[in-house]
Image (tube, rainbow over all chains, first blue to last red; front, side, top):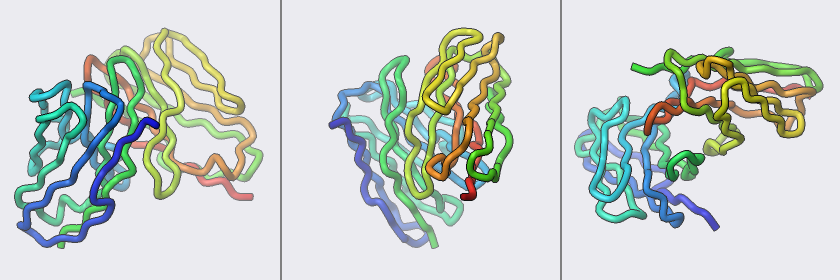
Length: 111
Length: 109
């Protein structure tokens, strides 16, 4: 079964405490992406990766880092989280000209 | 940069009424995709349109892609309570997929 998994699903943290949200896919897709979803703003792309060791900034990359050491994993790193990064985060994966498969989402609250 | 605008932001309808959401891009798109997100869920792919003027149907849902490949619409005939959710369009330009802001549909029984 095609799957995109994210962990954790829910996280409450404090300002400045580094955190990582993991994303893993079992479809052998080249492309992976991270989005944040905020009320009234829809889905905004943070970073995307077209293949292993290839990452590019999306529309809202400030305050985030990513890495793509293996094809199946694409972790999102917040080195020093701030309250404005409180959001719902989705990882997605796809191949060229095909649809995106989204993970279940990670709800993050930064106090 | 490329923008994808979607209207309306919200729509409340009585069950059985029709519903339409519109999507407009500032640039010509290679394709457009539509997704549905149920409350508390994640976006789920509905359909992809590629050709200029293309129309596709899925049961009560009709999707159109404009002749200039810059706009699209989703029309639901005779809404049901199971149609509740947020509908997103997403326009593809080269390798990037830009999502619209979504239309939240509420259906009252």
